[in-house]
Length: 347
Ligand code: TXA
Ligand code: MG
Image 1 (tube, rainbow, N blue to C red):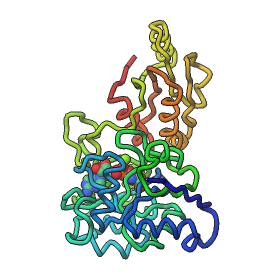
Image 2: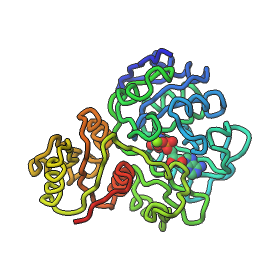
Image 3: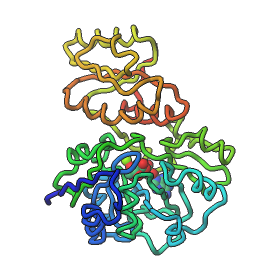
Image 4: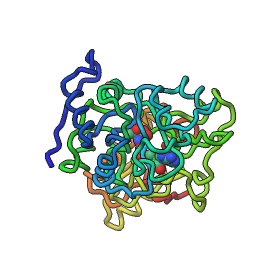
């Protein structure tokens, strides 16, 4: 299959009638799959009402069938078609954070969405992306769009159209290319079917931000306890993994540098994931800067691109600094731990 690249400048007017957006909308209506930019990461979109389209998403990504997809909408009105009820707290959160990086889990109204999209569960995750091109495309095609991150299963999520091409070229009908995404980590997945909502996946909207609006919010036990079963099926899989063996290092920079030296003495090519502030403190085969520690948002934005860049540098081992687990740091540490297969070395 020839994957077409449709370039769309997100700052132009009248995106809904933009020829590339219209082309992408036609493909979606024909039950083809198209990668699209969102404010978090690129998504691999398909008609959420069609088994055919959703089947193509799973096939292109090599995604296990038990992992449900997030449904993307452009208008809150669309919810009533496939959601049983909108709890009060969810209503408040939608008012505050939509469009934006918050996926809300509702009770599913059966019969409209493809059962493949929801993996046969009784619930459904929905979000309204805060990206002008995504919103225009959703409005133009007029469908609820199922969209997981547009990477091959297990790889870091794509924050640029080039990442999508690297993983899925020839496997999907098209990519809408609007440059880099902004937030860089995926949406927060929040289960609002319980009286006290539960974060199943930390992401672009922080626990602190949610609690300011609706009071107590819990964290899924599996986020802190490796032996607990995650409530979000996708969280049980290893993810974001670079090709090299990766370790998180909790300790001083001198300690991390000693680890680098040991591995280099064994003849291995060693990479370090650090930030602008500490860049000059390391001597390794590859030192990659992932944003600024003083602005954790910039670390989130650069994270997946940095993990992918290590693959091009052919390192054998990566040592990564760790980050505070507050604010968006919670999502960053969650992704880094998964990328490292939970390997953390404490000084
Ligand atoms: O930012 C994002 O959320 C991106 C962009 C493209 O919107 N999408 C994304 O989708 O990250 P995906 O498929 O890579 O991750 C969806 C996560 C998975 O861990 C999945 O198991 C969970 O959400 N999920 C989806 N529906 C669920 C449900 N009904 N109950 C529990 N977890 C659910
Ligand atoms: Mg994903």
